[in-house]
Image 1 (cartoon, rainbow, N blue to C red):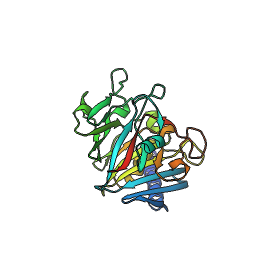
Image 2: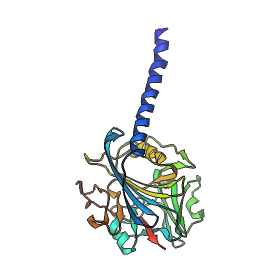
Image 3: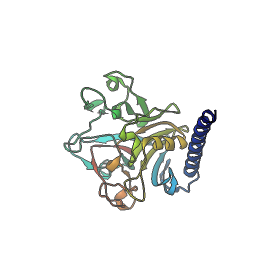
Image 4: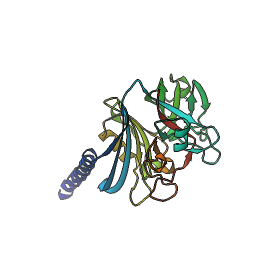
Amino acid sequence: MKQRILIPIITCLVFVTFGAFAQSDSLALVTTNWQTQKIAKGIVWKQSMFKGNLFGSNQNINILEIEKSKNIGISIAYDTKELKPTSEFGKEEIALAALNGTFFDIKNGGSVDFIKAEGQMVQPNRLTDGKRTFHQKAAVLISRGKLKLAKWNGKDDWETKLHADEIMVSGPLLVLKKKPEALDSISFNTSRHPRTAVVLTNSNKIMFITVDGRNENAAGMNLFELRNVVRWLNAKEAINLDGGGSTTLWINNQSENGVVNYPCDNRKWDHAGERKVANVLLVKNK
């Protein structure tokens, strides 16, 4: 009889403890003192460093918050062969800001995920054993500079049927229609890494988010933690992009070559560790 009573009590304590940690983490995020800077009309850059009080770890988060505007547009920049730093893409395109994009071939260049630009497919998905991988089941859609997200419908030709001027397939999807998306328990999702995400908020703002990692100053996040973060930031929809050494947020006219986060590819806690990538998302004046 005692054993039967003890099991539900332990289960209850586990859920209470988990809930307490989640509440503490969400409180740490929403009450943090964000350092903010206006980049342009309708664009604000926010940064905050958490000293051991977010998921029991050090974290460094940058957010570029973009209000809906007739004068500001989002677009894709890419190269099918040459890899370039995110900052270089941004400068070449005379952008206000740039965020690293989707997954790519680090040896030979080019995206491994579907890219459409100027109404034409420029790179198809590279399938694994004839099947989609986990980062080919969602997409960023851009039409006339406006951004939205989409979820794979299970069909092979899904992305070719989407109606958008520009498309970047990526993933996993984190939030859709204000509800958390299920995440598999693969290592990519459960391990902590630097992360890059795009969020559409309930107030119709766009957020470009970077989470630094692989350093004692910033642990990085697993995707379950990142999913919590974007939900606490009032995400209506959210998608994970390529992360790790690729994670980079560049803002025009900022110091340190415009790189505002701490890319980890040089294994140093500075702004010089950008990895060369195949594609980016840009914020530009129309």
